[in-house]
Image 1 (cartoon, helix red, strand yellow):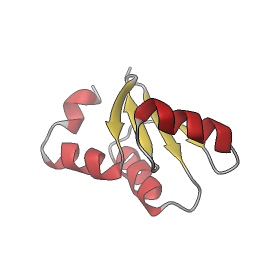
Image 2: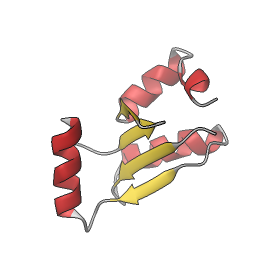
Image 3: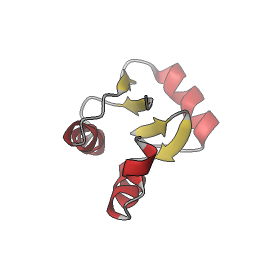
Length: 83
């Protein structure tokens, strides 16, 4: 079973779009809402080098943000990762 983890914020439109894409594909995901966790968010940003959310991981591999996820999907490379 694929493991999808999304680090997000409540009012982030790109986070909403990423979650919607996974829901459309029938993929369940684990979500970590970072709004009230500034220290955890800072540590995540230091680990990934990314400064924005969402930060999306599939099977512990950093995919990136929504733009990266969308590009994978449009290139036909997302579905194989989700199997």
